[in-house]
Image (cartoon, rainbow, N blue to C red; front, top):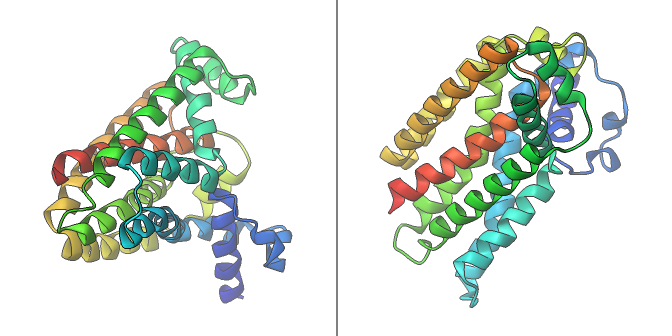
Amino acid sequence: MIFKQHYHALILAFQFLTRIPVYRVFTIANTAPTEQAAGKALLYYPLVGIVMGIYLLVLPWLVQYYGLGMSAGLQAGLVLVLWVWFTGALHLDGLADSADAWLGGFGDKQRTLDLMKDPTCGPAAVVVLVLVLLVKWLALTEVLGLLAGASDGVIYMALLCVPVMARCQAMVLVVHTPYVRGQGLGTQLKNQAQSLWVWLQLLVLGLLTTYVLGLVFVALLAALVVGYWLMRRLMLQRIDGWTGDTAGASIEVTELILLLALTFCLN
C-alpha cells in the first residue's frame, strides 16, 4: 500500500509540474489520487527538477560536444523555449495571476485572492512576464557563454541546480507557510505533507551539492534563502499564506534569482 502511494505520488509530481504525458504511459495516472498520495507528491519535486535540468542541458552539451557554431544567445533562447514547454507555462501563469492580483488588490486580501482566479491577463501580468523571461534569457546567455572554459562540469552542475533548488523552495513554502484557500490540491499538499522527510531530503541534497560545487552552491543557497524570505514575507503580509498561483510565481522568481546569482559567482 505504501509503495503504491509513493508510486502514484511520483507520477503525480510529474503531472503537477510538467507537461510530460505520463497518463499515456502509466495507467495509475488516470486514477484519482488519495489524499495521502497527493501529499507525498511533494517529496518528488526535486526529482522533477533533476529531470528538467538534464533535459535543459542536452542542447548546450550537444553544441559543445560537436562544436556546433551556435551563439550563446541563441542557445539560451532555445533552452528558455524548452524550459517553458517542459512546465507547460504553469508557473508563468501563476506569476501572471499573482502580478495582476498584487497590483489590483490594493492591499486587500480578499480582493487579491479573487483577482488570482480571474482568467484574464492584465497589463501588470504582461509586463512582469516579459521582464522575467527577458532577464532569464540574458542570464542564461551569460552562463552558457562560459561553457567553453575549463570548468564546464561546474557550470553544467550549477545549471542543473537551478530547477532543482527552485522546486525545493516550493517544498519549503508548502510545509513552512499556511495555505489560504479552502479545499483542493493545495489543502492536500499542506495537510498530508511529510514535513520531516522534506527537511531530511533537503539536508541530504544540500550536503551532496555542497560537496560537488563548494562555494558556488553556498552562493546559490544564500541567494535562495534571501529570495524565499522576501517572497514569503510578501505573501504573509498580503494574503496570510500561499496559494497555487503564488507557489508557481515563487518558482519562477527563484529560478531567475538563481540564474542571476550564477552570472555573478561564475564570472
